[in-house]
Image 1 (cartoon, helix red, strand yellow):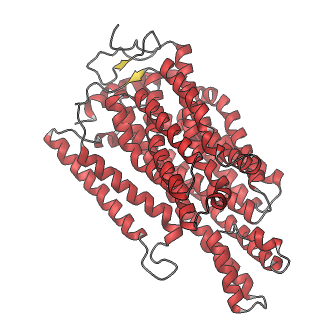
Image 2: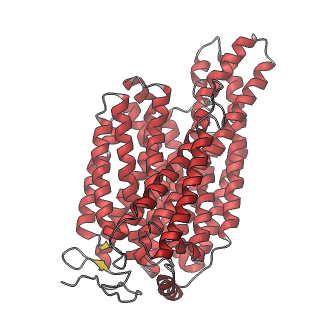
Image 3: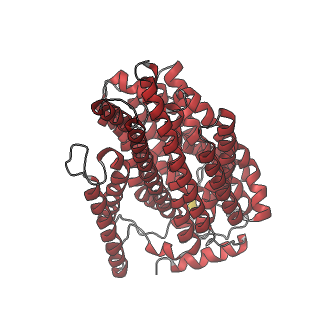
Length: 554
């Protein structure tokens, strides 16, 4: 059997020496029906990875009680997943180009399922934290392989449909996670929040084994740039650590007055990434193997799309971090009620995913991205104005926001990767996803920090107008600050502290208005960034890919 797969419609034939050469599993798996079964595997695997980033947050209070976790240990349940996830995606995308993206996808799912079994079986905090760390490794192997495989498998009209499905998986599952987590924590066991990954992961592995075509870059020299890999991984780890932990340690000083590790981690991360860029340039000039092709940044739509993706993720995830806190802390929703309200967002995303291919044919992918980001921004600004609002008002804003996510999230990836040589899809996908994760962490750090500071100041101001002793006021402010408002329902349940709790709840609503409004403004900046994207026809895309394939390494 030939070592290369038959070209898909609209693509140019490949040969074993080209960067687009692919290998197939036994049989012809390049036909349209089989490609869509492969797409089902990608969507399912992506859903598990994305959902697991949010599902644990809602179940966390029950986990804390069951495993007797400290506050620091509880914070690291989510932080360690995000930290490892973001740090390794660039490297895993590169490994996918070298050794095969289908192989990385399947191996990542196996690692993810094994660690999910361990997380659900955890008997103590340390076992859970180690399992979450390994889950992050598996997730980092899965996600770059998905977008790079789509980039290699689909062209023309099918490409827009595939990325629409991918976008609904990302946007929808980010919203479904809280619902599933709330339901499991309320009616079953928090352990099923992790064990649920196993049966669905097995289905994804079987589908991928049968229907995904293996793709890799056959022009890449065998070998690994270990120095570049270490510099990029540790540098990204330092930056993400600083962003994720800034709310816990403080940007300069901790609560006890000691120096915070955050600025040192951030400075070290930036310095290491700067050293990585310099080292990669020097290695490339010498003709040595490199960990990342810096020439990718010369591709206009990839460069502008990556910048836009980071800004959009900053606004999106900052808002998604803020909203559950105000719903449960100030507006009286429980975990399950919050999950149901967030489910409305997922419904909007899923519904829009069906219309995106037709919209893309009529308007072009670039216009769909721009329209989607504008709809997102309008919905988030509307949400800021509507707070505290009722369930219907908030639900309408979230539904419209979901429509925008359905248009923007995947199509910005589609546009960004369209001109990237297929052989470098894994590397480009890993880089794009890494930058998006940094944007997400930055959104939580900046908008979460804004929420906390506004909440603390607002609570202090309101309590200063009461007759409470200063020590009591200080204690309440500390409790509200440290819990980011999560302690307000407990204060409200006690008749002695109910009036104080209401003042804190009002401060949380005001703080959420500010941070959500800023998130809407950031999304408007993201819209401006998308104006630099260019619309390219499928024929022109193929021509540009051929040009960039020959120049990206120069």
